Amino acid sequence: MCAQLVKSFSFVRSEIPAEFVGLGVIQLPPRNFFQSIGDYFAEKSGKQRISFMAVGAHEIKKIHTQGSSILQSTSVPKNLIESISIREDKTSDGLVAISHIDVVECISVDKKGNKKLKSHYFKLMPALLGENTSPIQNVVEITEAHKSKKLIIETLTTWETAIEA
View 1 (tube, one colour):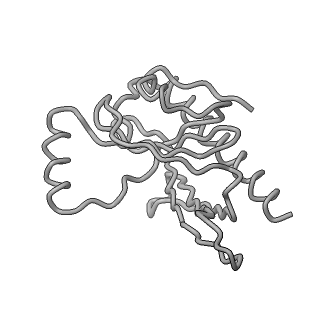
View 2 (cartoon, rainbow, N blue to C red):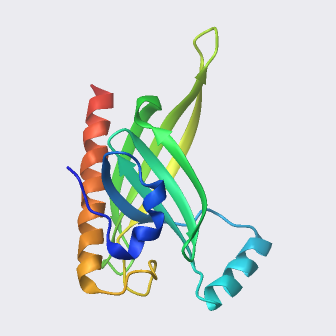
């Protein structure tokens, strides 16, 4: 199960996890008022902020970008994942399928065996021309991005089943 990185997203290649499965667009993290103003002007100059979810065989990575610059990336190793919950939804107009993914990561375990957990939420969206993925400029790459999103869901569903067992 290995996806290809569409050409428009090659600027994130350095952050792609080993044994790459797929890359999807996720909702931007919450921003404060001043950051939102900065985002507005950055978008006007063609440097839109986009966040991605990259899945490899052994980890999930959150990658935040602005234009073709990587602002931040964080990873959640598969072996530290306590639980995964995936639910499908559609936008209010019923046209766009969205996946809501909740991942609980075990940060540490104290001497008593109590676990310190951290929750991660991903709102995985399809790549839409001119909407949430300005780098994509052709239909072939949009189709490939949709296949990549589907591979992510299939992989995480497999992980969810394995964790539950």
